[in-house]
Amino acid sequence: MDHSTVLSIDNVNSSSSYSFLDKLKAHIEILDPVTWISVYPCLAGGVMASGAMQSTVHDYLMLFALFMIYGPIGTGFSQSVNDYYDLELDMINEPTRPIPSGRLTKREALLNWSIVLSIGIIGGIALSLHIGGERGWILFGSLMTGLFLGYIYSAPPLKLKKNILFSAPAVGISYGLITWLSANVFFSDLRSEVIWMAVLNFFMGSALIIMNDFKSQEGDARSGMKSLAVMIGSKNTFLVAFSIIDLVYAVFAGLAWKWGFTWLMYVVLLSLLAVLFIQVKLYRDPQNGISFMQVAVEDGFGHTKGKSEVHEHNAFLRFSLVNNILFLINQMIVATLIGMKYM
Image (tube, rainbow, N blue to C red; front, top):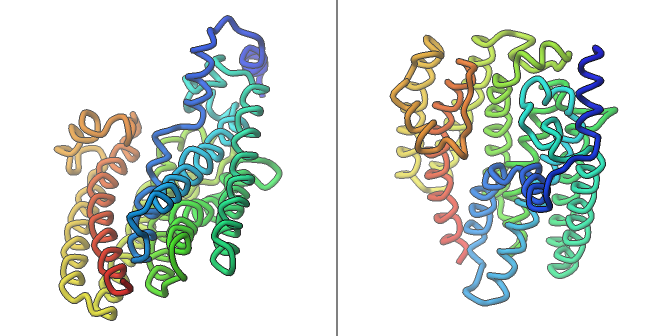
């Protein structure tokens, strides 16, 4: 670490003249609210597939608690821990974040994620005891797994994000696997179809995070982070991620046929064809492939998808916009059909 970096880190740990409102905004920002919605489709799918949620005040309150503990609390905790331990990297890649910009000190950031973690553990225990039995244990195990992975993903000595071979599965488990399982057992016994959907979301989440690392490729290379883009290059990273995503769609179509949802199988296959078309365009030309989608990324979904100066990451944003919408539609359809089967 050079002398200028040491001075910069000292600056972000010093007291500042920011107002209470500025500090409050920074505390919310470090929880990264935009990322909370990433777990909601899987949670909704798990609930719908249970076919057991009732239109009662109790069940609506339970649903609200589920979305809170996985969104602002669980996902927010992982984002806050990430900012705390990635100060040096963020000073290169994202200097406007709350800690490197000086709006929060490291001590204030530590307090932030410590409080959120405590709320998550206490809330997880309470909800698990309320559900009880085997379902309660599955919920508790899922929540604690998510919080544990959210910590070791960024915190030393494990710091899973240093190597994509560990970071991608961790993200897949946290955002895709345990969310489907938890939401299902919240209202019913675990459905076999839900286990399959959880596994598919695990692989989809893993593939997407592989490409999301394009945005920090420069900083990763400097700091020794082993993202796939750093290890094998951008072109090969696209190939690996696209192959996983295509396999997810193919298995999804096969499962739809096996479960008797024949018309859904055709919808999934059509989605796969659309995704393949986009993948070929982006692989050949990451800078200009499906460039017409750039307006939608920047203007229509800029606040949620983000923006980037890295061509490959911009290509990923355009791809994920189309892919995530198609995959979400198929997920909600299959969740509805599974739920109707068990009603």
